[in-house]
Length: 564
Image (cartoon, rainbow, N blue to C red):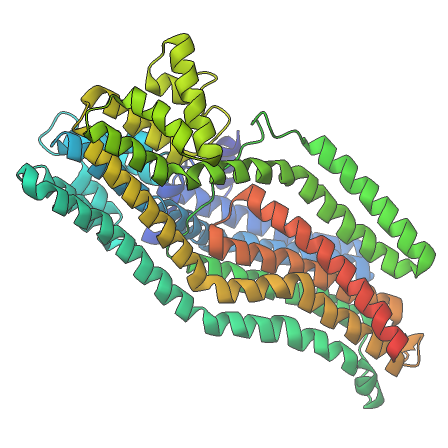
């Protein structure tokens, strides 16, 4: 339906278009089912239509309403006209998230090759074991070379070379390991794994150093300076330069939010690699909330917060409280159950290295994998041990194989949507077929999972200083400064109208809107830089930030008013 609509709009553009190579590559990567020419033609046609609507609205309506309609339409037209840049930027963000799976994918390749020196079989196993854009790309190359002498690994590495050259080198090492003697193969496979991790670490460290300056500029010119200038409104009026309400609305509610959003989007496109969190779908049985629940909770919170604040304080503060509390509550209710499921997944993944190590040592000593799993269930504490115990129990009761006990219908991982745990289950199932030779592969995977965990933590720490500042600014510092400066400006203006031009209520609403926008945008930026743009994680953190920002802004205004 969406593709048909896009093609229909594109046909309205009468001229030919020539997309650049970046856009062609971005559209192909995103897999939208349309070509780049369709995207460009549709953007041109939609932009012209919006501009015409804006001109028509100004002509028919006139006055300030027509001007507002025209301005909104022209801004929308400019945004649509920039669709090609936005598509490339969106593809860059998605590509960074895909590259976060590179260490896991190379691990699967090396584990399979350590059991059977067949690069083709390893490539097919890796493409099936790790879901995502990176594995889909490998799978397409494997299919294209299925009937030929090549494995698809070299073509796959070349495709991703512009963004992660180390991945191409790792694929080359995997190919080489398949032709080496068994005594040398292990060292070559270890180099393949460390090559990818080192490349990601170097790029993340360089990225963290490069964004320090832009993030500081965003903090200074997008947060502190605009909010501090609010206190100067009475001084501007005394100097004969009164600030009108329309100017404040345009600056604080249109231009500044747009500038902060664009700057944040630019920073996100520069992220080279993002280790995305485990995606949790709303269909998960432990996710109890539905959109209707979130909507009802948000409306109830908005009405309660708005009414109580208006009753105790003032009308304009009630509007801010209703907006922030309503949207924040709705987001928290919508996504908090997904965070609970993610916590369970992380607990299971935390014990995987220990479990695989214990199982691998027993397998190398000749113990059957099924028996080793049962032994490890009592030795590994926490959520991982619980999963292994359930697997062992299902095998005893139902007589199923390991893979079915893990990922089959109602298996132990049926409610644990962990790609890492499912990959470990695939290797354990393979170990049950291969026997003792698979023990070394299990030990190697245990070591490498621990290495991947350490690498992810190191990469998050590399950008933590920037992201922590952004998160704290969104939830606390910006609303604190905003509320205090609005109170100071009101006091300097002798209450009532500020300098005879802007009322305290109007100023409080304009700045309050900007504070809430900052809570949304900066929290999204901080989450995207650290963990990628997972919808549930972003939504949950934005909801918490909105609640904190709303409370801080109103408290700061009341507190500062009582002091000045």
